[in-house]
Amino acid sequence: MTSPETLADAETPATPPATHRWSPVLAVALATFTVVSSEMMPVGLLTPMSHSLGVSDGISGLSLTITGLIAAVLSPFTPVLLGLRDRRTTLVAFMLLLGLADALTALAPNFAVLALGRVLLGAAMGIVWGLAASLGPRLADGPRTALTMTLIFSGVSIASVLGVPLGTYLAALLDWRAAFWALALLGVVSAAVLATTLPALPVHERGRLSGLAGALRHRGIAVGIAITAFVVLGHFTGYTYVRPVLETDAGLSSGVIAACLLGYGLAGVAGNFTLGPLSGGRPRTAVLLALSGVTLAIALLPYATGGLVTVLLALIVWGASYGGVSVSTQNWVRTADPARIEASAAVWAGVFNASIALGSFAGGLVVDHAGNHAVLLTATALTAAGLLLAALSRPGDSRPGDHRPG
Image 1 (tube, rainbow, N blue to C red):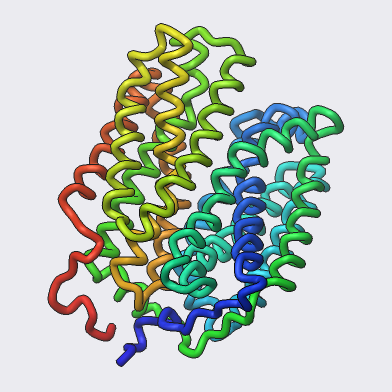
Image 2: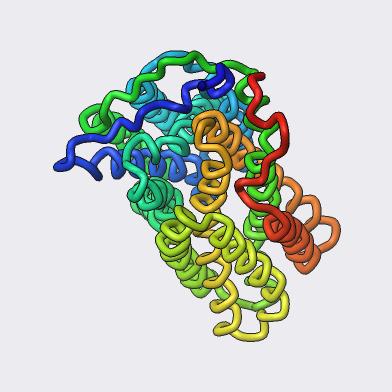
């Protein structure tokens, strides 16, 4: 019998008609692409934004921190906040909010208004992330769940490869505000696509805070979330500051660095589509492969800066491995207890976003006080801790009392 703490997770999959089987999945992938592109766009536009708003680059950089922290706070409470609201209606509404947030950012006459836009974006991102991570099993049957999850998370990888560079290019042709107007339009388009392709996604049990606590009391879920925290912390501790490493230690020019990072991004897309399907049936294997590659690449990068080929190889391994992190860790959490999909996915999304913000912040402290090699060493230690935890655990690990009601 399903306990109250399972929230709304034990819903019957809402599989659309066969002729439209993949359209709702691709619609959710478009939503994740739009969300991540909106979140990360300031990375490519930091300098023109700073000049236009009359603030320092450091102040402009807070636009990323604001969004990440708001999303991190909201994501875990998504099932509780939404109650019995249909998940299709919710996704459409919050994608429209995302469009409004990007429009407000584009119109911002000063940093205060821009910060308000980024707060709204964080709210939209937190809810969309909190729901998207749990939708795979509701949009496809068992054999197709792994591919469904892979496609949903492909939006994250593709945003890194295409979304931010295209926005940066548009900003160079027009101005930085044009990039956010384009994202605002994409948010509205994404909402329309979701509204026309998603099946109804009703919920019959109200989410409770006890359900979130129940998910965390399950050892397999808790371990999967801890693994996620370690690898995302480590990744963003190092990757946020990879450009100074390539400039200072490897002596690469801006154009060559851009080409290397493009190679990293393309490898990330490949990693998502390679490790994603594997993680559907063998999540532990996929997580071990992903974390092994990330740890190895970060550890070797300081010693690979003597030549372009070795730098590129390290970045490709890093990209391909990290590209599979989102889908493989989420599949670990999902496999640990399928009865708590929405609750565990919401907590996972919150931890993921919090780890992005904390990793970037921690990396900044380390690089300022100890230098480039120290920041990569710190990143290696964090991802290695996640790898060790994964090696010593399994998604199905549980203990007596894991399944008791709150």
